[in-house]
Amino acid sequence: MDDFFVQFLLLISSCLILLLLYVYKSNASSITTNGGPLIGNLLDFIKNRNRFIDWTTEILSASPTNTMLLHRPGIPPLVLTADPSNVKHILMTNFDCYPKGKRFTSHFGDLFGQVMFVLDGERWKDQRRIAAHEFGSNTLRDFGLDIVAQETHTRLIPILESASKTNHVVDLQEIFNSIMFNVFYKLAFDERPGSLSNDRNGSTTLLTAFKQSSFISHERLHHLLPFMWKVKKFLTIGSEQRLRDSINIVHKHLERVIQVKFIETRGMSKVDVMSRFNNHGYTSIESLRDIGIGLMLAGMDTTVSSLTWFFWLLSSNPRVEKQIVEEVKAVRAKHNRSFGEMPTYEEIREMQYLHAAMTESMRLYPPAPFNVKACISDDVLPDGTQVKKGWTVLFSPYAMGRMEKIWGKDCLEYKPERWLEDGLFRQESPFRYPIFHAGPRMCLGKDMAYIQMKSIAALMIERFVIEARDNRMCPEKALSLTLIMKGGLPVKVRERYPEFKD
Image (cartoon, rainbow, N blue to C red; front, top):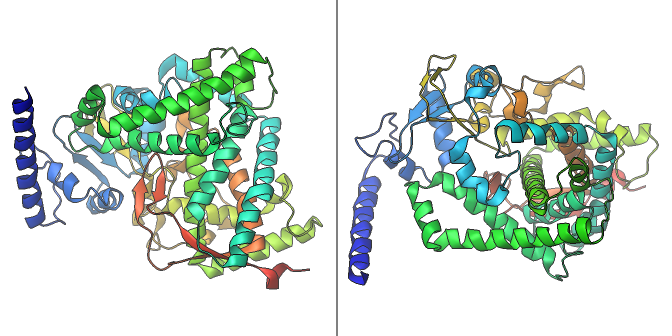
């Protein structure tokens, strides 16, 4: 058996070496739709594995319909689109034909469990109904804003002040990770990480486990040979062993927190998200754990991604930064508010240019650059593309943000003004701008996300100048559950005294 296993590994290695040699000698820019026999577009996927987002944008831009059909061995064909009419059809007109599907659930179910982000059918509807009711409440909105204010004043501002005094380079993406992890943990449980788990290093350990488990779960989608992650999972080796260990850390931590908070102490604060779901009949430890994981990952990762790319764009666009500075000053003066105070909800609503600047940032760098659906019955998209039962459909908000057909010839420019009309923010069709999804699965946390991001950004911009170490070259992109920067965002920080002192 040992000899057979060694020979098998040698055979596989030899095949891979020959394949890589072929790829190296071939033209990296060549694009096919049907690909070669047996292997489909596998070679295209290999050649562009480190630039998947930009590669798919290029081939969608080159297509007259902004839609492509791709093939890989071992899985059904993939329909890739950046056409707003197709997106509307998938997300609303023929919604029931395009659920998340079993493949998506198999990739993310180990981590998320039974939470609405991976569910379809009646269970999704039930969680969605509760979440829609609770996320529409002013008390949850105010609770979230209070948490952001506390984390900003006690942790974020001191970190940035220290960096400005020492002139040290800091990783802004990592800072946002740490801050938003605490924000969403408290929003979920009304506790600080580690406070109920008797773990001094609970916050750091849990955050690391969260990040690793989300990264590896997403990595399953991009395996060149999709069955390989299942083999590794069965054998408990490599990345699948690390995923299992990380998920165990997350599950055990949150189960202990729920045990203490809801069962042993019977203490429900009535304001956090878990208490609200508990009041709606979600009483099992597993169901509350899954909802907590879903809230924390969906909220934390998207907010971190959005804020990081926003501040990188701001660093390379001083004109936009100046406009935001002037708007913040004007709103402060109107409400007779002091320098350094956390913006109120009313102030945040009035910051229209900041809202446009953040929206424009997410157009170019959407936190979720792809969205995957399964087709459960034969269908035809509005552009004439046939989709067969069992195929996977993927639409790309990242590519859509770079389409001249949608945004004009200046689509690659960072222009917040495209969102303003007479100084007021103008909404765009969610099917042209599906950053917060659209249709029945429209993101319920959209308003809260804007409130949190704008309040943090306004205070940071009021107090500091954030200078990216290299604002000329776009940072290398990395895909986890969201679009992040590989290696983080190194920045220098200095106080904005000339503008705001006294």
